[in-house]
Length: 217
View: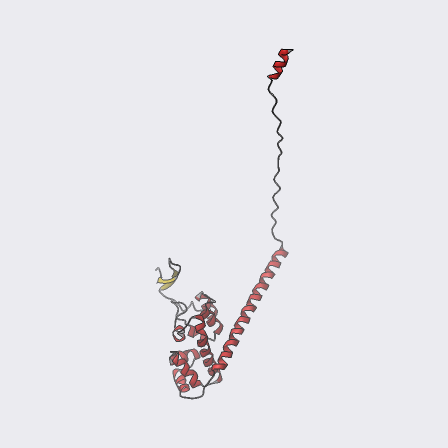
């Protein structure tokens, strides 16, 4: 009896049982392709957004044009005075003639007091108004700025934009709103690449700035 008790006392106690709970992962959601109606709605939304942005851009351009017109009314004087003011800013007669698409002798006649057409007078006054506006874009030498090529390898300048009555693009370029010169040229002169063959090309240098180099032959 005693042996039985002692023997039982030395029997190892049984380890507690451990319950293992298996957690199943939730099923992955099924990947479905967008329906035709969803794609159509998305396309319609994008078109509406683009249209709204275009309208906002047009409104901005109209406001700029209205501002220029208002300034033109303030500076409007005789043709002689307008030409004198442009001369004081450093414009040569050839620059003014090219921007108004007339001959240099015509400008010289206006300078002496001969009558000019209302259209030319309006463009002349608008040119002077733009020159008044350029310092707000940190352009303090308008006459020189109008002569600088928009793209170094292409002989198109801001004065060519003015001559082509691309006033909004001219202001976009002056303000820095559009920084890519190709976009300006594409919008103003779609065929500009045809006549711009050159031995040089523009590339992005190591510092991230545009530079010019000879093309590989």
